[in-house]
Image (cartoon, rainbow, N blue to C red; front, side, top):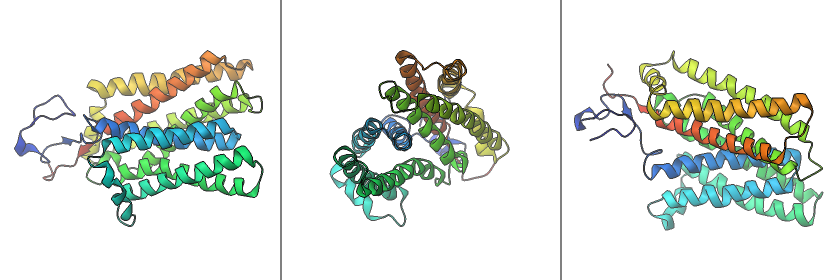
Length: 299
């Protein structure tokens, strides 16, 4: 049997005896899980940021990302899509079940909220469904972190920092989306959006450093995951995707715009959004790619 996550050959009797890479969520059909998880983070974060800046277009686009992209990818990954609804019946024991329920509630509450915001803005009903949909959007982001941190056999994912990192990256993606929308909507304070982008970029740097630093002092399997980040595709995703595209380039553009007092041009705003999407996808890929199962027989 070949190890898909690393470049070495793995014999069948080495399964779960040596460090065994997981490939269910990032190889072949597992790519759909990777994309679906990021779509949830992107859509949830975008909705929360759009809610804060009160942009209906942002809320609508965020709702579409969750309803069409995240849900569509999840259904496409299922071997029996018509029986997918059965997974909802186990919310007490399954995070997948809880995630499906939260996503379904977001879609329903979001559709009602968008209708109220368009036809009856400012009403009590609109505010109630904004709150409900916002809670579900936050839950979708947390779900991505919790479903991974609860896989106890992969120690690299067992960190409270992982859900926090997903929240920060979801917010960053949402800020970039609202920045693009704000160029055509006078009611959005673009300078406040840029300031928020700077704050969350700094938070992302701190959390990533803490996450990797604490992992180097953890158990051997976690240390091996960190070492795997320095070789092959994971190091390219980390350095080029996360550090360069996800942090350095958006930080340079936002800081320059904030210090000069100038609003970013449409092309720069779209570039920041593209950078954040690439950075988010690369971060999710890196974390999934280097996830190693703890050996059944300790070294």
